[in-house]
Structures are given as C-alpha cells and as structure tokens.
Image (cartoon, rainbow, N blue to C red; front, side, top):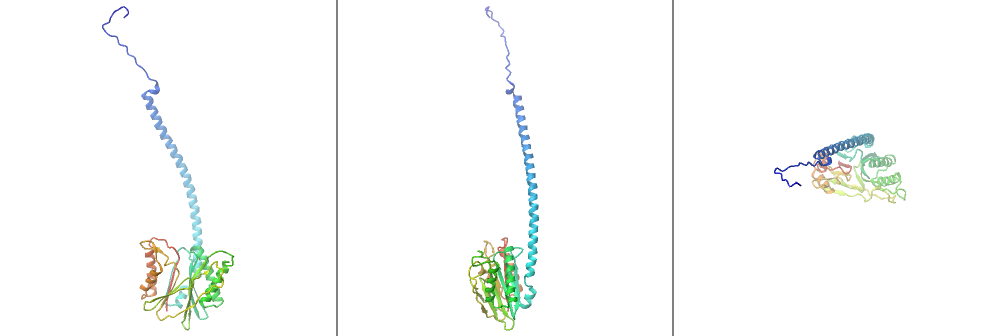
Length: 325
C-alpha cells in the first residue's frame, strides 16, 4: 500500500455485471413464446376468415347450382316433350312395315331430339319413303325436321306429287321460302340432304332421287351397287330456286336390298385410333351381312356402331333404312 506494507494474503473483489433485461435469456424465451403464439393466433384467425369466405362462396355456388339444375330440368323437360312430339310426327313403323314387310329402321339421335328423320306417305298408288338429314342436330335440327316433314306432307299428300325429283325440287323451294333464303333475303345455309324412293304398288317399279345422298343396292348374290344423288342439297342460301334433281329407275330383282342412310354412321369417330368409320367400311359391313335377315342386319349394324364408338361421343344423328324386295 502507500505505507509500503505488503500483504501476504491477496484480497479478492467480486464484481457482477447485470445485463439489461432485453438481453437476458428469459427475455429471449418470452419473445419467442409470444412470437410463436402470435403466429399461431394469426394463422387461426386467417384460417377462420378463409373458412368463412369459403362458406359464403360455397353457399353462393350451391344456390347457383340449384338454379342451374332447376333450369336444366326445365330445359330437359321441354326437350323431352319436344321428343314426344317429334316421335308422334314420325310415321308409325307398323304402317311402314305393313307396306315394306321386309325392312328395318336404325334410328339413333345424337341428342334427345334429332335432325335426321324418315318420312313415309302413300299417294296415287305410289309408296314414297324418304331419309332426310337436316343441317345440325339437337334442337336446331329438330326444328328443321319439323319444317321438312310438313313440307313433304304438303307436296305429296296435299298436292299429289309422287315423282322423287319433283318432290325434291318442290321441297327445295318450300325450305327456301320457309327460311326466307335466296334472293339476298337471309344468308343461311340451313338445308337438308335427302334420299327418296317411290314404289309403284301395281307394277312394283322403284324410282329414286337423292340430294347429296346416295342409295346402295345389295343384290341377292352379295354384289353392291351405289347410285349417287345430285351434288346439291335441299334449301340453302344459293339463289337457284329452280334447282334440278334426277330421278333414277332402280332395276331390282327378288331379294335385292336397298339402303337409304344419313352420314352419321360413317362419320362416327372410334376404334383404337379414334378415326372415322368411313363409307367404305360401312359398305363392307353391309356386304358382310347381306345373307342375314334385315332384323339381324339391324342388330349387327347397331352392335358394330356401339363397339366402334366405344367411349367416344356420338358426333351426329344416325339413320339407316334397309328395304328388301
């Protein structure tokens, strides 16, 4: 010390430095706990908010779904009723099969109602049968079928016209007038493709005319013949009110079969590669089954169509008619 005295035993002084509270371990723990609790509370609050929003949206979606379901039921009910009307307008199959005792009609609409239809009438000793493929399918096609059916009744039943080419010419004029087509009135191409035969009840002579549709004749020995129709449809926006069609006399022998059909069968997509069935394959199918009865042919055509279609959607109305003489 200052007196020059030296102590033998050292003296110890203990100094403890206390840090500020924000640098203590307990503060760190407390802040971490508060942060974690805050995050959990935020997540829970946000989750509740999202659930409330989802519940509101779900209620709105349910309301809209219910409204759409009700509207869909109303629309479907209306179309189902239209289907009953369309089926009532189609000629009775019993009447057709009483006139053509060896025949079949394969009729498969794409939708509830169809743009394809068949027509039958008897006038002045002529039995007239037509397969008609209207533009479109579903409701638009059904409207066209109603127009075509009524005009055919007027032409054949009321006016007594039985020559297929004259019927098609008058049908063309009637469709254009009904839809106000031609002469720059309405620019629409809605029309019909038709394959039509007329059979004389006394002589048995068969005449045929086609508007963009052919007729296939399968002879009793299995030989296939095809007669093409005129390359013009019935109706459309073209300004040719006097469109001409050609009547062909079909020379048929006993057990010969003719086929009238729309393009729906051949245009169906399917098979392993999802391609069209095509006309050639359709004709080959007819030839492969020519020895069968027409009832068996109808079943074979229908089974083959469904097998080919598989899981693919039906693309068009299907109508195939076979008549054996």
